[in-house]
Length: 505
Image (cartoon, rainbow, N blue to C red; front, side, top):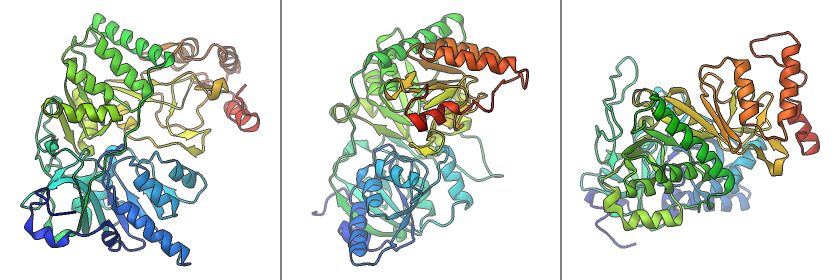
């Protein structure tokens, strides 16, 4: 690719090379920090070139070339998928959504560490994770002084640049040049005992720099690309998603009417997916105005809210847009750049900020039990789906923590409401509201046995309510452990039955 103003640093002109040449600079056994968060801002060329190199080594009998991969969150098939396909990943953290990675993790062929996203940078700074050898960072441009115009996500990029011995930069010409100025990179973080308050008191506050500082002497390669972010189309809002959204919208309206929320609500956080998008569309169609968002990811529904004025500002660390959403963003980028702030994920997910701002958190679940414990990560208790992501950061620290799911899965063979969850990611202490298409259970101020009645009667699918009520009543009748009554011999029998027969009942 010819020289371009996207690379304005003369000292790095000599470092421009192909992706294959850059991949040769990554040694076996290296720990590599990759940019990327929810399919945005990840390196597009070097991971694939490295996978091709590993494939050729494998074919020649030189097996065992593997690296450790750290990211911000999930990436895309061009990174996770290609490297996993050639058995090139030894250990992966802190979040993934790739089907090949998932299979290798669940087969015991890849180590995986599932971390709260807010904690990863701190762990890296503290040395808990070991040494990072190389960072591979996508940028929109390199400025004259070597600093980087960040791409469509920031994630852990600041930390990876600081921690890595060497840096490979992918300059992606496909990323809009007008992303410049949208970012807010904060350099005031420190380890205890030197920490100071982070002075964000509303989502619109900017406290950092527009650019990522990047030591020129660390840069060993610059690779030019012209490739779009992964973009996954969202399904049209179905009846289940709409009913869940309606329950949440009505609940929020009631909270405002009662006075437990201000008229402009509080900043919202939303996980990624069809149900969260349905909620955002419902908010956009409702009476709300001048809302704010302090979240991880900007998705299609938030763009609509920003454009209509329902949402005044959105603070995040990344995008997760459909093809239509990307076109909308690029066509109206001048509008969105005034209303969107992208921060590093140790700020977007920071417990102090989430608590201070009073964030309303909405995230998905795999299953919840009758007392309000939530499993977000493990199918039938052992098989990793994706990871906890940022849901724990927001659930533990948010003003309201709302968890949503259809009441059943696999055509009704699995109930999302069970006697006891097979894996716990969010304890009953952090879960305030559970919502399915059948209803909303407000668990605030309820003791465990009262929570059980609320969840069974309002959230469980009618086909499963009799069995759940029978379990609960017999557990209460046992007279043992009456704070949270359980029948230990039956508590996980639903999961065992599904494993043996393909049905929970």
